[in-house]
Each structure stands twice: as structure tokens, then as C-alpha cells.
Image (cartoon, rainbow, N blue to C red; front, top):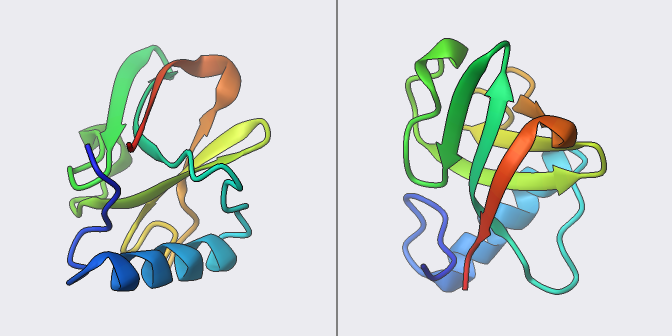
Amino acid sequence: MDFFVPSAKNLEQAESVYSSIAAHVSAPIPSDNKRVSKLVWSHEGTVCIGEVGKLPPDIFRAPEEILAIFECGDVYKICTQNRGVINFDPILANTKDVSKVEFFK
């Protein structure tokens, strides 16, 4: 799957939005352009799947699509409009609990 950010009209706008979200949540932008598209992890005994463009697991009560996922050392930051972009902290997944990571092409 090619890199995108939901609602971005083109690649230039997607890059701009992605960079803005990264700055807002203090996340590094990967120098090799390996951007996370999908993440599978365990949270309190529940297997969770987060994928850009889809809703996060119900357990997080964030009924809006995932805009970006960032690898930040020992955690991944999963950002939706409210969780990470506008109001609250992003959804966090500890790297030790992650079983699968997929990247955009």
C-alpha cells in the first residue's frame, strides 16, 4: 500500500499533515521513509489491530480513523484526530507488546 494520510488531497498535503502530526506528538520522522501502515499488539490481554485509514480497536473509545502511526523508541504512537492531533494523547502501544508491523511502500 502506498503512503497516504486520510483526507489529504494529494501526496504533498499528506507529507505536510504527517510532519505536523509528528511534530505535535514529538515523534521522529523516519529518515528511511519506512512509515508504519499497520500495527498488531496486545493491550491488557486483547489483540489490537491499528491501521492507517481504519478505526482503532473499540477498547480505546476513539471512533475516528487512524491518521498516522509513529515508532518512538519503546512505544508506538497511534494518532487519530482527537487522540494525538487535537485534544488528547495518542494511543500508545509498547514495542514489547507488538507482534506485527507493516510499512507503506
